[in-house]
Length: 264
Image (cartoon, rainbow, N blue to C red; front, top):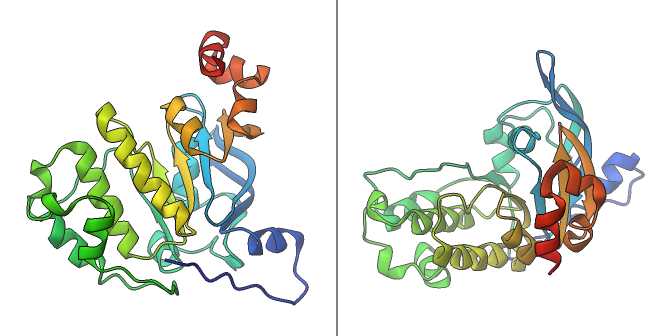
């Protein structure tokens, strides 16, 4: 699933220039709920084929961040671009047509569908993404190692396999950007590595992946780069190994003992 990157030679604003070099970017994104500042001037970008870890303590604004990026919520201020398309005012459904897809913390598949039926429905999803490789449901079942589960009702599958089947359905929609909200939550340890391989598959196909997750060790193994949020503000951006050594991150999130275990 090669992603076509369309670049323009016209002069553009600095924010749009960053957007054109990134699969997804946002500039000075803010969101408040009454007097609570859930996001404060967050600026970031994810390159095609990059897996970005989004870390932070509970209440840091991570899920709000995903909700605003995906269009489930609209920001009070700031912009969101998919490549050089400004999608800030678009709905969640409209952003999906530009290739932005997201998952939810506690996603549960329809109890009445088999895995294959879910994938067949996903293959009919329209969007504006152009790709040189389009997979069939059967090909995705093979790639993700899910063929033996295809005829089983989704609610009868282990939770981790349900999540993998949902990600296979997303792959059929030809995403440019995939935002994952705690994909390892409630998943057995043996299935975390299988899910990790699926996430790496998306990146290998040029998809930009944003990964919100509390399983810090898995984030460090998967991600090229991490950002850390605290009280709605970004307090760190860089390599994971640098994050665990950062005193601000240790104080706000990891703690010195856990950071030492990760470094060890």
